[in-house]
Image 1 (cartoon, rainbow, N blue to C red):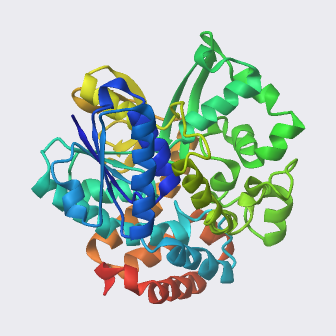
Image 2 (cartoon, rainbow, N blue to C red; image 1 turned 180 degrees about the vertical axis):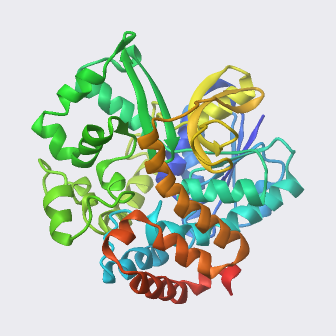
Length: 444
């Protein structure tokens, strides 16, 4: 009976989907689900929702909820991280301060000033959790991280903790499902090879019934509907040769080509063929995802309350999130393959040793076993290295409290460098340090 702990369980919709996935696996239906959050009201809601799933499905599983992180972690076999340190208050600063300097981030949680500072807030908490796992869990207990910035967080955790861990995202699954739909292929008939870094991995191969399907993808990319919804990813494929795994809004933040002015963002990056009523329509805009989070704050909690009351159906199908598949494979020793963020131990040979790479991983009773990829096409590795340069300095600054390393990290950010002078970048970083001091203990 594994104990599965969720830190940040107040992210109730994600908790719902992840615990539903776990409880749909027969061998995991007697698990103990331990929920922890710093918000008592959100935590209670999450516990009631998981209990509702257990009761409706008549399962032997047990759910517990606590505000005490050590209690939640004690004896856990799996610790899943879904935290957002500073919440929407800090996230607003990540978007609004850079906006004043002309840096237009639509999500701002991976790279750039927003991603760097989100990492600085998150890393001390992750390292504390790692130390608590060293004390309270078995040596092979696995930390599963869903919190962004994925690469910065996982790289820092690898260097600062060394515990078994993997970082998980859904961009590979979502992208390959989309591409299969574009070419009219049933998803179970396609195979693919993806590798790179989180939010900038590359579909290196895409086959339908064993045949190269890239010609079909390029043909499908000519469709005005597809070009309207994915302008950045299609242009990146046309210019660099391969399709990238993160959505156009996100992908536009990691390179210097697309977000130079407000006019350019509005005219070229906001997905077309969508109505203003569609929240997704606005995600390409500066602050688009932050605005979405604010607008969903009340309505998604209402949705959860209706599920707890039995007024709205609970999920019945397993999602494509990798978390439950990892736990199932490790508990049952039934192998599966996922794409996860892990330390680069010679896996991608033209990316720096030790950085966080996203590669195929075999998972079974022995844990996470990353697969060798070799060299990426050099132009793709070069794009990845532009991001990795920022990540390396962010990790160095986070682990040592070196503010100057953080200034240099943001100076090397491709988007920031495309629109700001060096003195402007230094002023922006100093302003962000001052505004976010309460969440940055390593710099006090």
